[in-house]
Length: 290
Image (tube, rainbow, N blue to C red; front, side, top):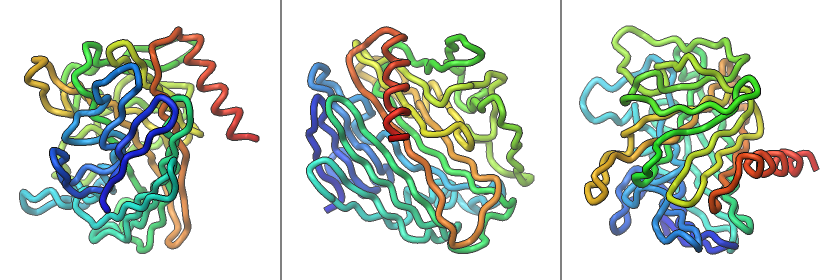
């Protein structure tokens, strides 16, 4: 089985690997669909996915043809879905052909409105030519009126809606001084274009109809936020583009056969005040310490 449906609390989620099924296109893994009890429309573009592992990169290895099999290696390399329980599933990707990276993504639904994600990975060879490991997740949002993401910086709320794809698209945290190295001829992409903005709390949110999606992370180090106003293509019936509310994990140095990872939570709930958003973040971070 390449996917399955999970119903917990107010959420119904379809989680699967990078196989095609029905209208779902091949190559898009993670949360294929996320629907709230009080909002019948899928948060994510129906043919693709959210919390979708999309890129493994080192700033050097690029495709020599038009296949983009290296650029989108997690889309193309074999991946296996496993249902663990009524609330939990796991995606396992064996060592990939180019970067030889093995990974496990565990998704757990929790009432009333949470999708918890635990990501572990293990480099099995010295395959990253510039010495760092870059990982990138995409969430393609289904034509919201407000395409922005919102986050905190210097005690204030900040809003980011990039004007076009690959334009000042990546927001680093305040203490992130690591500049990715790219070889000559490496293509333009979201993760090599930086915004002058910085974040100082590891979460962001976006608005979807009368709901809010809050993306939270268990750490600052290594996390980067990324935005595109059109990364998910077009929703023709709504005459608008589908933004991408993305994130990255950057590991500046690594050891072969050593395991690394991080945890994230997506809260998808009816719209609330910003004070309540901060309460959501604080409650989750407190639970991580218990």
